[in-house]
Length: 369
Image (cartoon, rainbow, N blue to C red):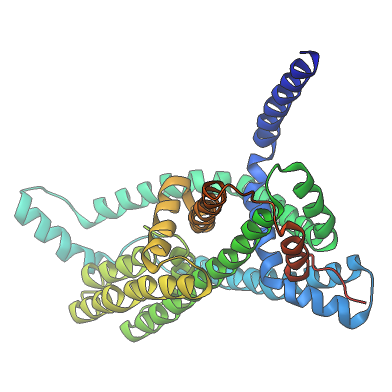
């Protein structure tokens, strides 16, 4: 009886402090998840460096982390800086946020004729500037906070990446001892995470890059200014379903139609964006997700869209992983039910499967002598 009471108290402590720890760590879940996915993607490079230079684990982990910073963060910073320069140049151009009065006058006259209002181009320009300042003002005021959170997230992701690479084997061994789950099932879940992570990262980035390039071609042909800025905005927009590249090429088409008065360019850009740019996303992601994981193309597409709808941007990664884990859990359940129906146990072959898993683990593989 005393032992049961003690067990109950321990379980209560685990639940209470587990929920408290989750609340404390919740703001770092996305950097940690991104670090884990980077470990999967760059795990082969880490193992190659470790075996090639015959150095301690932490040296290979440090070199891999430095390589990731150089090929991911530095180019991203340069692209954002270039796009930011284009945006500042556009804002500082003659007229700034003010729309061309000659172009705007025709649109205002048409609205006045249709509605009976007495608007003027100057009044519309003044109101648009006020709305823009009211919208941009809060964003500018929050910019330091957003930048601080971004920097903290990048630091957490970088440090986590290093320790996941350097101490991943010991971390996973500690987790496997604490989780009351058959060893072979733990390795199966790890394999699912590896496959889906690699598939999600590659499909998301590939689709965003292809959409951005195609949209950039459309912007250039349409004769728009700031093509580089618009292309980069398309890339970031394409990373988020429901927003997507349509938010950029759609706004550019409306600008061409109402302010540049180039109907053919606006129609051509809209058709190109609708039929090619936004459609290619629904082709690339399911194909890559299905090709690199066990998810059906329909499940792959729905898991991304549903994940974003339920969890926000992090759902791009969590959605497919959750669906893959559910698929794996159902397979495990079926295996256990089959064993019970035959009157056997599910423990046979665990050591062999676990040993095989250690040999195949992507980021913490045991170094061969």
